[in-house]
Image 1: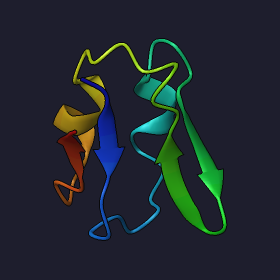
Image 2 (image 1 turned 60 degrees about the horizontal axis):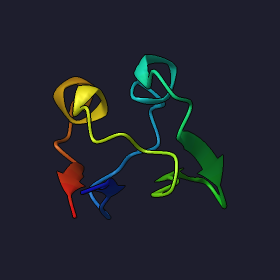
Image 3 (image 1 turned 120 degrees about the horizontal axis):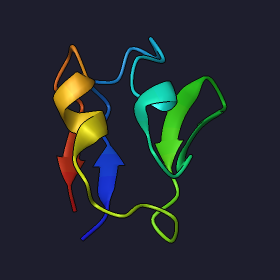
Length: 56
């Protein structure tokens, strides 16, 4: 299962550089995860200071 970024996201960008496959990007002032690229490693979720990243 891929991860997704919820409305709790404050667009701090902490998650993006830690993604080993580059699945996270910014779109319309928010971070988004490409579900097709995500390998469900959970690194982004563990780095998120607002707990905005959850497993789908």
